[in-house]
Length: 390
Image 1 (cartoon, rainbow, N blue to C red):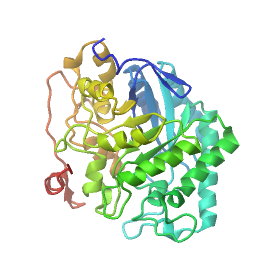
Image 2 (cartoon, one colour; image 1 turned 30 degrees about the vertical axis):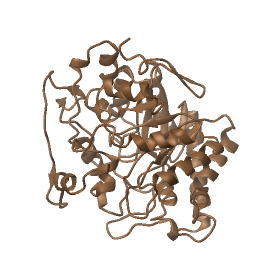
Image 3 (cartoon, rainbow, N blue to C red; image 1 turned 60 degrees about the vertical axis):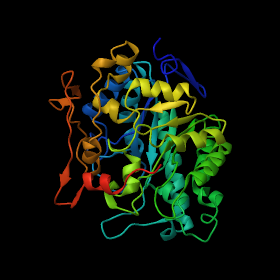
């Protein structure tokens, strides 16, 4: 087989994956305003499962009541059936699935809560909410739970020295900043069973002044392995300290545009992998199957996260496996899909035809840059002004 390692079966803990391709969590805004799945959101996941990915992470599901567009929710038992419908649509095509659980602190244009603004009672409540949500998604039939501790979510803000300036047991050292996350993992395993599969998405680097560095990520990863995580999903950036709405350098490193080199963040995941004995997933500008295969052959990571490329062409895995790489409709990394989500609009792609996940004819290439005058930023200047680090 041309892509021998990419399409070799892989044992991820107790899960048997048919290949090493992961479609990571990406918020679609395809749900109702109350956060219940719709036919469109179920279709979205089934199409990606049919497309051949071995593992699919169901998008960020809010565990509490704060508003956020049409974000998926799992805040009470009425959401279980909808999550089950998504999980079933994935499983019937031979893929495994996790679900990303998220909590975010109060935020508005004028105010953003940080770890220093909440007391220990609220921390206990957050942990209880994660446990309750975990019970629900397990009842819905997902294979594992992903705790989102990257970017600008609550756990990530605790892990980041720039945001977490607490002076108590939840702030200070790497271990203290990770305490809320470690206690959440422990509580889930106590309530749901020690064999419950939990993984975490963390930043390999915040890419902000005073933020979490790759050194901190490595140390945090060791703690998470000891706490019982069965694998790690390492991302980057997405912090807000240098620009709202992913407009600063940190945001660009989270969602690298075409101005960035392929695999620009992979060294972060590689360093984490060297420090732990559990599998590590790599993400960030892995555009085509030959690049993914090379990364695996070089033994840099264990799994490859292919997000925007599979948004553009859900058949990316099948086309690669069947030797039809020249038919893959390539992502242009214009970030239209991400722009739609962050403005609470349903995700779409400049490569789709009729807005229904259908790729445009072979050979179509679009070069799109979006400017939002009423918000006051343009991606192009940020790319030019914030070149990637060596």
